[in-house]
Image (tube, rainbow, N blue to C red; front, side, top):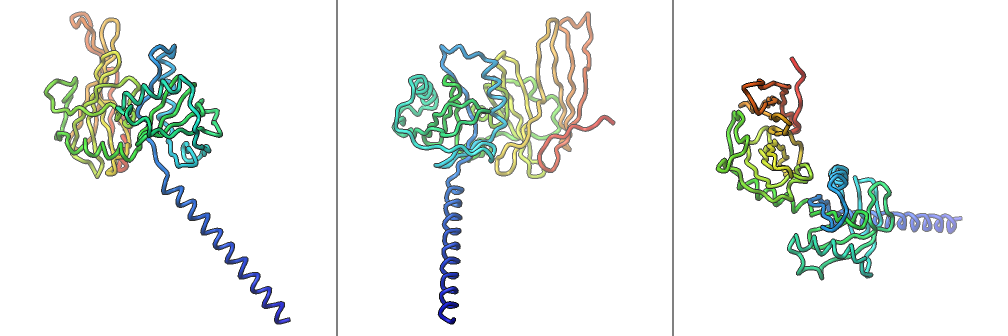
Amino acid sequence: MFKIISRFVGLFLFCYIAIIANTEAKNNANDSVKDETIEWQFININYQSNSTTDFELIDQIYRSLKKISVKSNKYQLIFDDKYLLNIKQNKANFAANIQNLLHKELKRLNLTNDQQDNQNFIIETLPDQYSLNESLVLNSDYLFLFYNNNIILTYKNKQKVRNGLANVYNQLHTVTLPLNDSYWPPEENDGFTPIPNEFNYFFKGMLDDDYLKAIKLKEYNNIKLLLLSSYSLSGSPQLSLVSLSNEFNFIDRLELGEHFELEDGGVWNKFLIDKNYCITIQKIESPYDGSKRQTILLNRTKYVINEKGVFIKLKRQ
């Protein structure tokens, strides 16, 4: 009887130790994958110049993509922390159109001399909702995805983007409050510092924003604030207020100054940021011929910045 009990206890301990060891191995593997996971920031969308792809399609793709978080490890591509797509390395050559798109983008990024560093993968399980090609390329700090075989989507290591933004932020001029239509419209010698256009998508800008320049406000409750100047494809100036965390994560964006052309005039924003960081925006319609028609106040809105750095629209009082 004693021998039977001893054997049973020994078998139980063996199984228990095996289960513990197996669990630890799985945890270590999961931790390893977690440690190797890279978060990516969308920075550019490009296509062949001779492509029939129109601007509206590009804009539609961008609007859907800028809301999606992308991560990866050596086994998976991860969308929004819930769609896990298995990937594996691919030694075969890509189709000619994919190779041409990639070369064009590497040239724009000054990475053509580093093409030998390309790591080619294929996505084994393609998600229908993203219309992606199976091809995936890693090069240095960049990830390249392909949309419908004629559009390339460029991502950059998000931590490197945040580090770059921290360096830019430290070099910006600081302005004090209140600001009453200051820097709007922007002028040549207003103290703004040019910043790389790749930050446009980080700041959730529109597809056609360009010629980015920035100046900073004093921090508000540990929230970093930037005035961001840009120009649309049509040449219209825009001025935005952007909030960032201490870790240089994007929080929110509020359009302060915008200009829309009309047949007989234009619609403008006028703004005030008072010393308590309360923001008032007036939208006005201004005719070209002021002697015949008066300027019209279309609406007035007020915003405050909450403890999370989000711009909150106040209800009318």
